[in-house]
Image 1 (cartoon, rainbow, N blue to C red):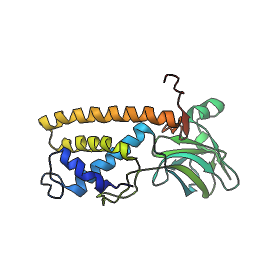
Image 2: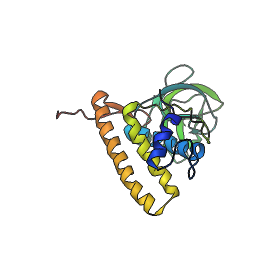
Image 3: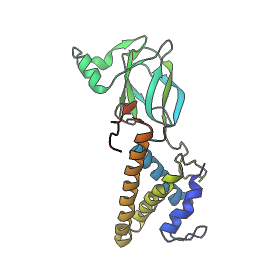
Image 4: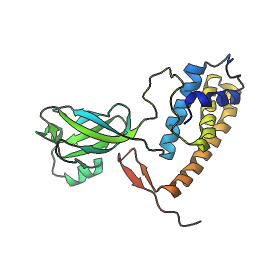
Length: 228
C-alpha cells in the first residue's frame, strides 16, 4: 500500500518543483500536510474506504455529553457492560421523548440506555451515568492519528485509481501559499478533483450501497442505480 511520501513527488511536479530539491515548499511540513488534507477530504466526499476500529472508552459521569474517541471519525455502535446500547438520532431523542423537561441533561442513572451522535467532536448518552463506565465503541477511523509534522510514512487508504485525485487536491492546497494568478490557475485542479470524487462515488455506490454518515454516525443506504 502506498504512503504519503510515495505521492509527494507527483505533487511537487504539479506545482513545478523538483522532488528532493524543493525550494519554495517544504516537503515534510507542507506537501505531506497537503496530502493528509486531501485524504481526509476525499474520505468525507466518497465515504470510503471505511476503516472499522474497536476501542475501549470510559464514559464520564454526571454529563450526557461525551468527547469523540481519539482517532475515530464516526461511531457506528456502542457495546455496554451487559448489552448493546440503543442508537438514536437527535430528532429521535426529541420526538420520542416529547414529555421531557428542559432539565433532561440532569437525568442520572447507574447505566445509560441510548446514545446519539453530535457532529464530529462528541456524542451524547441518556441518562447520564452516576459513575465512570467502560464501554466498547466501534467506529470509522480517521486516516491517520499521527501529529503534525507528518513523517511521510502515513498509509494512503485509497486504491491506485484515487491517487491522481489526491495529487490534484494537494497541488491546489499548496497554491494557497502563492495566491494571485497561481492560486487562480489551481482552481481548475480543484474542479477536476471534485469531478474525480463525484465519479468515484458513483462507481463505489454501484459496488456497495452503504456508506457512513456524519449526521447519524452509522451506515446510510444509497438509492439503487436503475439505469445502466
